[in-house]
Image 1 (tube, rainbow, N blue to C red):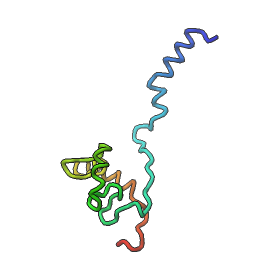
Image 2 (image 1 turned 45 degrees about the vertical axis):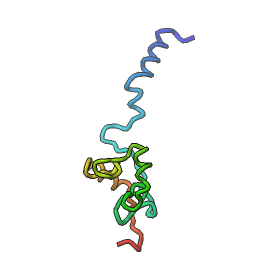
Image 3 (image 1 turned 135 degrees about the vertical axis):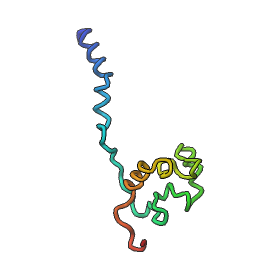
Image 4 (image 1 turned 90 degrees about the vertical axis):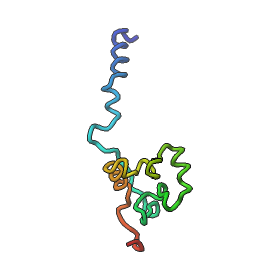
Length: 105
């Protein structure tokens, strides 16, 4: 049987911020984002196809439902470069495929 004091310490340490910190990335560490494939990218507008509302306005209701819509700029919030120039650009750059298809200039 576990001693009550030992059990209490285990419960306290298990619920401490130190236990949670082990699961979260350290400050300055970026979350790993997988680059999209070339066929998942809108090369005309330089955004992911599933967020290119210029090409496909039918995406807007799903983006709004997912709470990824900037009403002010009529763009997906996650890539709205007017609201968050640095963050959105970093997000787009992280997702952009490394190589363009040969037919895209």
